[in-house]
Each structure stands twice: as structure tokens, then as C-alpha cells.
Length: 370
Image (tube, rainbow, N blue to C red; front, top):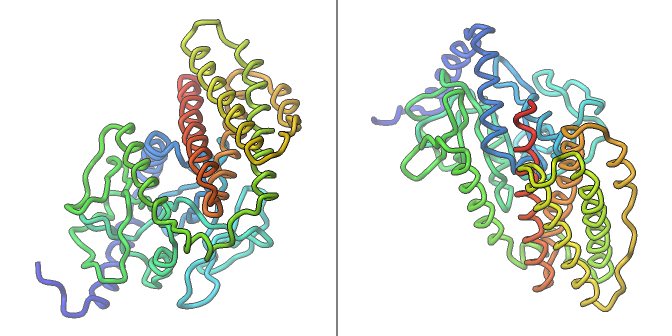
């Protein structure tokens, strides 16, 4: 189909049509579609539990991401809201939690006040409309496209929309940035060179996300790392390794106690035993790294053990455990751009992968109880 002679005018008209279509959705349908999309996000993207997740406050009948964000925050994620700082500039993201003080910003949407400025690892982006090639039609300000163009490596880009927002094309222009996935109430769609592909199996979604993460990690060159800050000094590196060792040692001790909640040899007991085995292995690895740097490892376990043992109930304990695992995952992710050591960097990447996998294992144990 030939593109309109005036793309800008066509988009303005299309936005009005799509907004009218979306706002006309009944409250019952919107509630059901929100619930379906939330469950698809939880099933397909458990990796968000260890990340900083940017999302948008619901506006004019958009998908309400707050329920999915609450799920991921309960398991260790940090949430962030976008802030317009200047016309024509990329968005700024500020950390948000339910107790964050906010003030009304553009469109009256809440802006976190006095919160940390963060860089999201993943974004849940609600379009007004989306096309068959995975490009989104926004509100016309270009803020998300400018923001995405400024981010290296790219975050995981997940468009979240209702099927009534689907159109054949938005006539993408050079400045438009495609999503990695589009999630609607009908399913999770991967954005490929040939267009949107519906992915039925959540395990396949997780494999695609893992591949994207590996590919984008390779884009962090030494020059890029230097631009974001000099490599960690030896002292900073030792502090990081000892902090991680303290957390892993605490996790292993806590799991030894949590295992008593399950019958020895049962499926949950075997899963948690494998998680504990990974944490013990990570402890051994961290000990070797610290000694390899000529230092004696610290012996502390921190306050996590006492807090964890005070938690009552198997489900509540698993949620608490995943918060700790999510914290470790975020700590490693934040450090990776400044890690140049050829031994430490791959070791911590393996440790990160083990925590992402173990968060998923613990989450799976919770599913029957939800």
C-alpha cells in the first residue's frame, strides 16, 4: 500500500481514531484484557524480577501495568516512571515504589519527587496503536523514540496494548524504533524482520529474551564502558566481590533452613536443593576470585539471615528469598559495564545467569499456591 503524502497528518488522524476506539472499550473487557496481559508478562518475562523496569502510569484507557509491576517488585525488581525534563529531549526515569512522593507532571501523570534517576533494563511501553512490523504509534511527542535512540545497549522493549489498537502499518519513519515484543490479550508476539510472530510457549519467549540479552551485552565495548565510567578500581572490585559473597553465604544458610518446610526428596525440596547448590558454588567461586586478587575474604553474612528466618510460611519465604536473589542480580547487572577484569567478568555473568534461572525456579514453586 502506498504511503500517504502527508505522514504526519495521517498519524494525527489515526491517533484520534485509535484513541476513540480504545476509550470506547467497556470496563469489563478492559479489566479482562488487563488481566490476560498481566499473566502473559508474568509467564513470559520472569527475567524482569531481577531488573529495573520502566513503565507508564495508565492513561486514557491504556493497559494498566501496575499489577504486573507489583508482581515483579515483590520478587526483587525496581520500578521506574518516565519524566519529561525538556521538550525535544529523551525521557528521564526515576525510581518509583508505592510510598514514593509524586507530583502531577505532563497530562497530570505522577512524577516521582526526590527519587533516584535510574536507567531501565526493560521498558513496558503502551502505544496508541501498533503495526504488523512491531512499530508503535505514540502520542506524537517522539519522547520514547528519542529515549530509545539514546540508550546503549538497548533495553528490553515490550509494547503492551489491546488488540483493538492493532493496525496494518504505522508507516514507520527512520526515527521510529521497533519493539522487541508486542503483548496483547491474545498473546506474546516477537518482532522479527518478517513482522510479528505469535509465540505460544513461554519457555520460547524466555529463550529469545536470553539471546537478545547476550547479543546486546556484546555491544558494550571497552570504549562504551569508559564513557559510562572508568573500570572498577581494585578496591571497588574487592568491595563488590565481598558484598556478593556475604549475600550468597546468607542465601545458602537461609535455604538450609527453608528446606525444612518441605518433605525430603519431594519435587520442591529437590528444586530448592539445586538452588542452594548453585549458591554454594557461587560462594566458592567468589572466594577464589577474592583470593586471586591477593585478599582474605570477609566472613560476614549480614542481616539478611535474621530477617529471612523470621519470615513464616513457605510461600512467603520463597517471595522473600527471590527478593534477595533479585537484589544480587541487579547488583551484578549494574557492575557489568565497569568490569574489565577478564576473569571476574565472565564469572559474574555466570553467577547472574544462575540467579535469573533460580528466581524462575522459586517462582514456579509459588504458582500452585496462587
